[in-house]
Length: 337
Image (cartoon, rainbow, N blue to C red; front, side):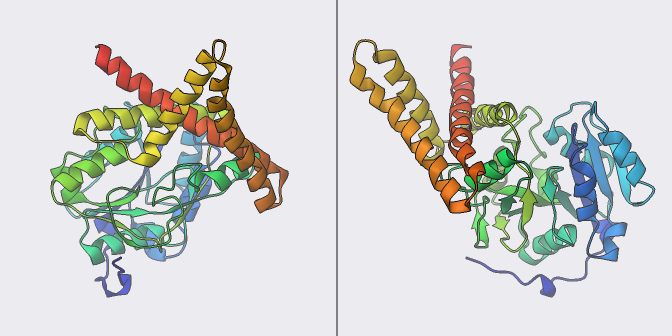
């Protein structure tokens, strides 16, 4: 896999970078996120940092307004379309200047290493890639969040995708978005704003179609705080599944094995429950799946020496079933229409 030397990249002008944080009701995380992004280099205070808020009903906007007095490079814009894809496109169209060469996408739920923005821009400069993607290391505060963090980076969580705890740098077909060459971003038309979720994978597909390369920089890592309840996690993964179904349909893709397995698990478990009144051995399907989840809970609890690990099976099952339900709902609804 290709390694890069960011030190060989020419000195970056801060005005050549535009950093964007899409937000919607992020009062718990936004200040920590902004402070982490501004730590590590005085040049960061000269990089335009835009919070594109989708109409938060909590204290997110007030927190950002307060921080503007401390960080003069911080801007706040209103994103009437609310979605992250629209937030990124709006920032590029309304804030980027003729000097802007690179866009850095930031997640309000993340805690960033010192100098993150400059590191991403230097990686783009050094590789000449259309996009730079990075690994996410999940961490949590509550018991549920910690269990979520422990299981999500495993094959029983997000299926072992390369940007979930990946250790090796190199060119990939998809990953967690960190930075973009603005010329490529404009060439492909930015994010598809009809995608509420999975907009990143859809964007990567169009970049690949133009011959652009996507570089995973495993040396730039972020800490991500996962969802802290079954309800929020279920909604997140249901929407992920719907987004993937739309991506499959738009670009004629096939599901990877790790993406297809949750669908098989849902269909097999449902079939077993339906058939069990007339053929009780069919229960082996849902019970077998439940046994895997139970074993995962025990294994994680022992591995981490924490009773919080007992949530792991519940969390894994929530991810699988919600993602599969979202995928099937979107796929079947479009077939009917």
